[in-house]
Image 1: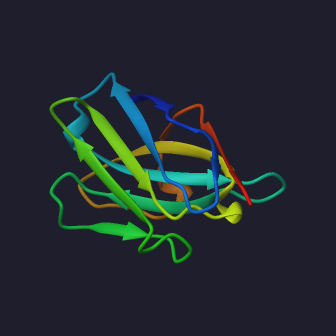
Image 2: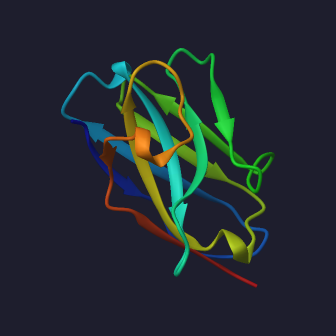
Length: 124
């Protein structure tokens, strides 16, 4: 298992930007693919973005494509989610997740390690 800790959430006005960070520890980070998910109050957990360390597979949810960017620094065991042009509907708790293997995944069931989440609130 990989231990994950998210940070960088907060309150921002619509149109603003935030960068979420995910610090990983425990196992060889490069053997995992990483993802970001979010869960708004009363809703199911939703896929946001995923990446493989090889760089050959990166995916985004339809609602964030073109506004959010996932990236990572394997030397620092860090994964980031740059969020631009934020909208009130982006308000949610954002979770970092890790799955074994070299291919990025978009399904929550395939992820075995999760962080505790960080709240992002976008005001209109």
